[in-house]
Structure formats: C-alpha cells, structure tokens
Length: 143
Image 1: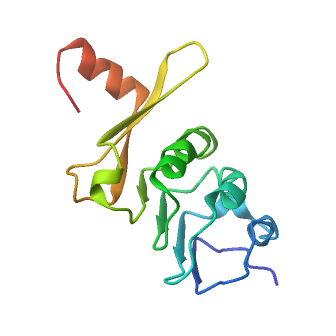
Image 2 (image 1 turned 90 degrees about the vertical axis):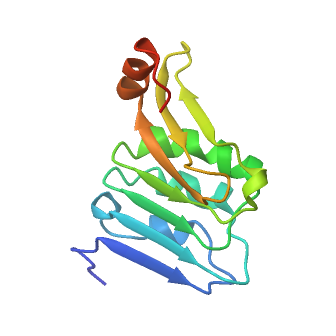
C-alpha cells in the first residue's frame, strides 16, 4: 500500500493494535492529523508516542480513549521535541486530573514550550512556543 499523500489518519476500535503499526506507515513525516478513536479500549501511549514523535509535520493528535493523567503529561515532552508543528493534543480525562499548564524544558532549564488548557473542562491542550512564552513572561503577561 503506497499511501503517499496521507495527511490524516483515524484509527478506530483497535483492540489489539500496537505501536509498530504506525512504524509501518511509508511516509509518516507527511502526516498532519492523527486520531485514536477507540471508544472501549485505553490507548497505551507509552507504546505509540515514540512512533508519533517521528512525525515532524503532525499538527493535531486526538485520543478518544486516553492514557492516565500522569502518562498524558509525560507524553508532552517527546511529542513537543519530535513534532515541532504540533499545536493541539486532545486527551479525554476527567478535568480535575489534568493541570491547566505544563511547561516542557530543555536539560538546561530553558522553556521549549508550554501546553495550556483554557479551562478545567477542556480536554484540549494548545501549544505555546517557548519564544512566545518567554516574551509574555518578560512583559508580565500570562498565556
């Protein structure tokens, strides 16, 4: 299967799917949207994130059956570094389980990006670049 122009991939109801299936995509660097739409099965992001982080053109990721809150926040680091165009990540957890803001920093402590949610009810994180975050902080604005 060539799939040379694939920009959006929706994976639905996949009880036995593993991370290697994403590794089998012939041109993962072209994918812009990825949706995991398994309603009854939790997505094991520990297995999928290393493959997703190899998709530099990715802009949106949606998990309809999500990982734990702790795992979701841990996944933000590799996704931030591997997918520089990634702007939104949707994870359907109970709102109180997720922080409103998560900073991703380099080993030297520089902020690479900040992921924010507009409210505790929102399952969607939006990425704010490290440059925008530092500029806002310099003028005393909270993003």
